[in-house]
Length: 114
Image 1 (cartoon, helix red, strand yellow):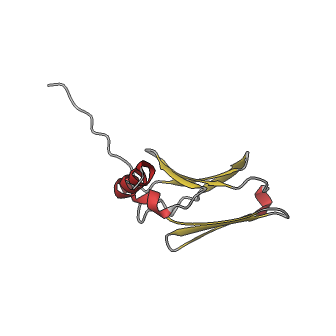
Image 2 (tube, rainbow, N blue to C red):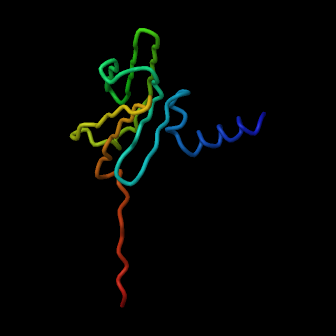
Image 3 (cartoon, one colour):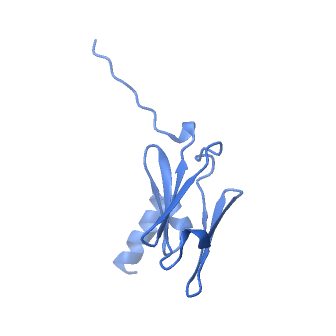
């Protein structure tokens, strides 16, 4: 087993989102949202079709020369389904932001001085 394979397996074990994404697709998380990035160079915004259905996302992007297709599972119960995701395309990278559900956001606890 190579070092790269070992690190990939460790990442999948500690980050289940990493295992749902294919090459060219990355999933990141911060305190307020999840960010999905897809590599789709040579495609314009009006040539991208994004569908959300039953906890998964499907991205189809095609132009005269290029065709991209991505599918990924979304974190179950952690995305705020009442808020619309935001998508943008810049320099061949499609970015889709999903707001986190209230229960998925970290709770900050303030410590009081006695």
